[in-house]
Length: 135
Image 1 (cartoon, rainbow, N blue to C red):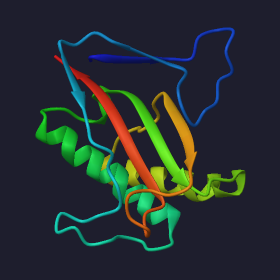
Image 2 (spheres, rainbow, N blue to C red):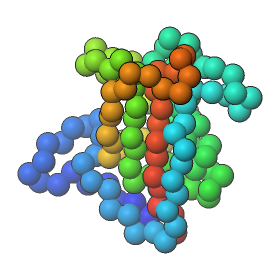
Image 3 (cartoon, rainbow, N blue to C red):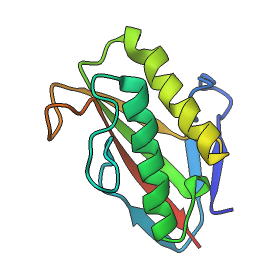
Image 4 (cartoon, helix red, strand yellow):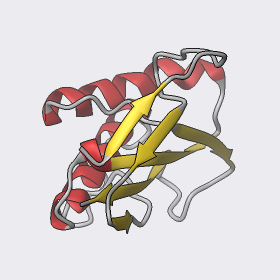
């Protein structure tokens, strides 16, 4: 295992993410931000944050597989969410949970969520940026 996840004493245990990832591999993988698009570039889930989050996480998994890794190798995520408000948290969590179920993996990682005014295309609600470490 190249990435060990911990919530150290003295920090809150958030449950929906981890505070620290300790990576010990020899190859670092930096993914382009992944969005809600199929392999053919078709939009997924217009106006639906849960559906877009699910697809973006599935696309991260596809990119990691191409590099020889899985979500187990992810050390850090950054989520860019359009028009973020705390009321959006359930939909975001639902999307992550659905992707987790489809992938059969725990996707809980250290994460930074950044509210943004817009993404590269007007229909996009979320973009997922991932850094992984592989042996």
